[in-house]
Image (tube, rainbow, N blue to C red; front, top):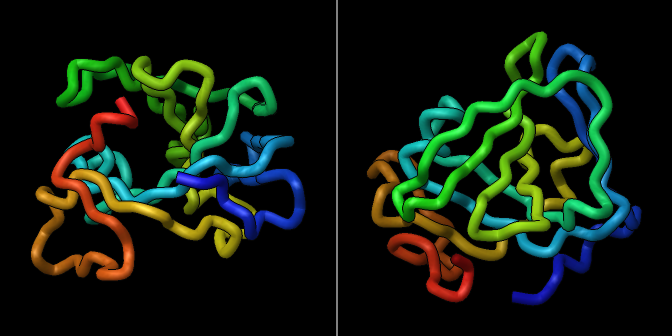
Amino acid sequence: MPAVTDNTLGSVRGGCLCGAVRFESRAAMQLVGHCYCTDCRRSSGTAHSIHAMVPETAFTVTGKLTFYDRSADSGNLVSRGFCGTCGSPLLSKNSAMPGMVFVRASALDDPEIAKPQMIVYASRAPSWDRLDPTLPAFATIPEERC
């Protein structure tokens, strides 16, 4: 997948509901996707979450994050970061993709810059949440992404 090209600011900024945690990536998003896996569904409070992948070397966080680690269906460790004050889900890291951070599009200051490019775990999407028919959809995670 090509890098997202509509991030004209050259950086990605966001934060939590209460303002205690802020983040910034000085690099453009590499990939944006919908995830319908059970863990993303449960941690988002809705049918799916939307993640923007950015390089960890260009990523900074200010404020206190609380992490929850869990083995994903793939067996990889996923570490999810939440605001330690208000509990807003902000980011995750996957042991299968070292060096990358997955920020929640819902936490971006300008969510319009995150244009989804794919859907993963489409096989787990509830019938009441419509999949975007213009995006490539994968039953689980594409092999080349793990």
